[in-house]
Image (cartoon, rainbow, N blue to C red; front, side, top):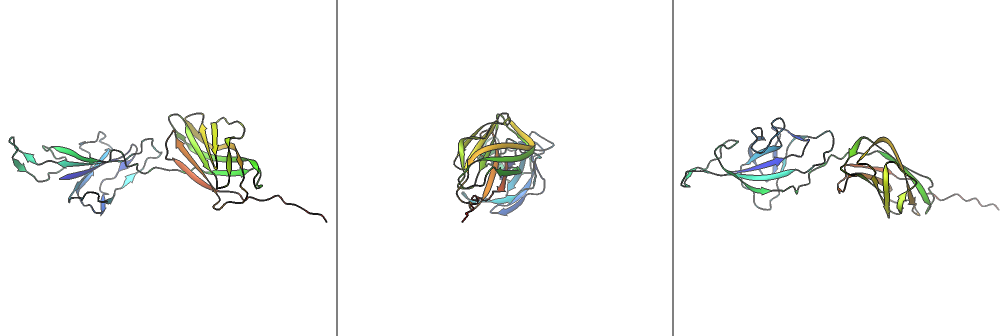
Length: 262
């Protein structure tokens, strides 16, 4: 008499009738928690329940799928929660068994007890949008200290509690200056470089615009790297999971032409 309960993050909508068992699990009655056994939102219940029809051995890996509609924009809370509950048999006042069968949801008149929880440990999947950007060097000379111009667009914006963090990962061999901002910037308050990575922090808790430009101090590698891609990621506050990510093919490192006259 076990029940699996799935709680969605804010903004998502789980779809009735889409639950499908794929591996090492089978389901009986299931659906959205419209009768609010756990949920508080009748129009879009936070919880989806599924009755387990056979025991699942400890340490087993189960697989199932459930249709969901994603929010238009990424939410700050992104964890999915999984809990298991057990519907207890019906007992009389003396504790004698009256009925051990599994009643229909919402199991009226029965005690239900929690038996397991992910406790938010499942980090879920993220809505990771793109952040189109381009990279233009002032020089393509091997080993040259150059101004690297990055232009990016975040038309719909990224918002945070305190600041948005932008990380630029260059191909191997590039070296960003410790203080890597080239000149001032009204958008980014600081830039910290370490080897081939630059980390920029916004002055305000949002980053929005279709034509954002920032100049960075970097040293070119001696040869064109392989692979030769720049990666740009956007993070909210101190989060370690990006909410925007894109890559851009880097430029070739080319030596300056020399003409010898005989």
